[in-house]
Structures are given as C-alpha cells and as structure tokens.
Length: 220
Image (cartoon, rainbow, N blue to C red):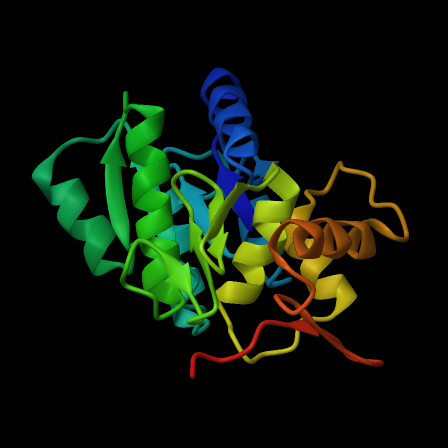
C-alpha cells in the first residue's frame, strides 16, 4: 500500500514516514502544495496524508483541486489547525478524516486503515475473500485454520490483492503498491514475495494469470 505524505515539517514527516514503513506502507514525501498537485496527477498512491499549512499552495487548495479532478483517493488531513471552522471546511472540501497535531501514531494508523477499507468497499476490520483472511492491524493472515505472521512486504502484496478480489494486478501495479520512490526494486521481487506468501498460506492463495498478473479469487 503506497501513501503520499504531503508535509513541510521535516521532523514530523520523518517520524510519520518511519511509522508508516514499520506498518508495511510504502511512503512518498513531498513538501509543498504545487509539487503535491503535480504528483497526484500520476495516480500512483492509495491514500494521502495532507498538511494544510503548505508552502506554494495551501493544503485545502490541493484537496479542492484533487476533488474537482474527480479523484476519490482517501485523504486524511493532519494539521495543527484545530478550530471547528477549519475542520468543517476540510471535510466539506472532501477530506475523509481530520486529525489534529500532535497526534498518536497508533491513532493515525487506525484512521488510515479505516479510510482505505472504506475506499475498497471493505467496512469490516478484516480483509477476506472467504478463503484467506488478513488482519491489517497485526499483519496476520489466516487460511485453512492456520494463522501466520507476514513480513511487511508480504503483507503489502496480499493486502493489495485482497482489496480487489477477482481483479488481476500486474507486476507494475503490485510494485507501485509495495515500494516507494527511493526504494530499489529487483526484477524478481514480486515473484519472490508471491512465493513466500504461498509457502506460508498455500499454493492456491494467489492465482497466476499467465501473461497478465496475479489475483485472489472472489468471495464465493
């Protein structure tokens, strides 16, 4: 799962980036509103953490332009602006959630999991296709009564597939969800991760669609 962090405060951005990476997210960080708008046109991310007091272009304007373009990407505002008018304006402009600094990282991660679930049409805290079940809060996966702990990138791969059961994801699409801008991707990285997940959960958990990509089956 790939997150765009839009934050001009280096200390906050570094702390949030570390926490997100520890929670198995790939993180890309930009520091101003103009760069953010340019990046968002590439549709590389699955959620946004957005500060409001940005140089170049205010965060609310970034959000407004995003929604005017028809982009429904989940957005959580993270800001020191705690007035009720700011909260109302942010939500009315199309934010999915609003978190006031300083905040606890565990709360940010829980809110991020919630907006991503809603975006994927999965309101329950667990992701499942009826065969394999994934717990985003613990990175545990269950299949055939066996529960295993996945590594960060194994989790990211299975999470991306379970958000869209029945849909084929290509190698590039999976790489985009697992790795950030500055992370080197080896040519066989996806194959290695799929092999590792299958070894833990069974060969039939992830289906290979020859020449197209990989998928998990739809719920029965």
